[in-house]
Length: 101
Image (cartoon, rainbow, N blue to C red; front, side):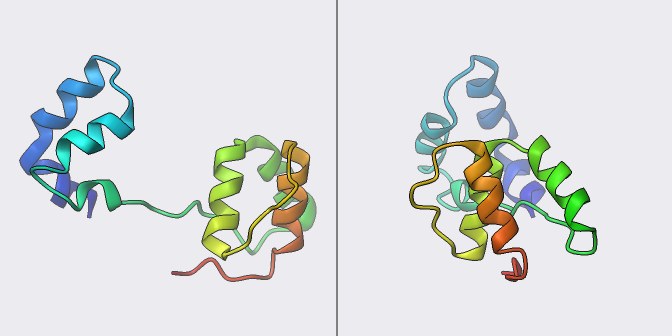
């Protein structure tokens, strides 16, 4: 799906990123030619068929942004979460919730 959007505007995407332009400014610039480009987003995948210990180990390797994405895909807010451990605990608590969109 991403190739479908990127192919016609490949050069327009490459130039701003090569100059280290922030992604929100790139999206703002590209919206003029293709409004759907900034809405392409894939959920963070979490394997449901692994043990709790393996899941915990894999979550500890993820960034807080990815943990927030998992919770967002599940429709869960993590109010009061300040540390990475808080987000990991919340992801573990909501493990049974489906992430299918």
